[in-house]
Image (cartoon, rainbow, N blue to C red):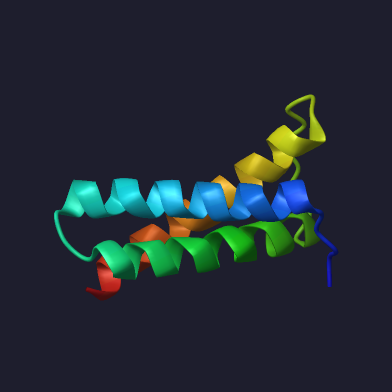
Length: 84
């Protein structure tokens, strides 16, 4: 399992909560559901996308990490909406 530092953990939490909040505003319902799904998605994206060979090369490793977490959180927000 990947070891994350404090910055990475804070980034996962911040991006997951931000995308969950935006998803709940866009749908008008399910605030807590979207927050939980997006936190899970951000963590999964941060761990699984680099292992799957996805590369962004944004010029900064933290920017790449943020992109992985945002992609994972967005995907899980979409899944939560479809399952609703």
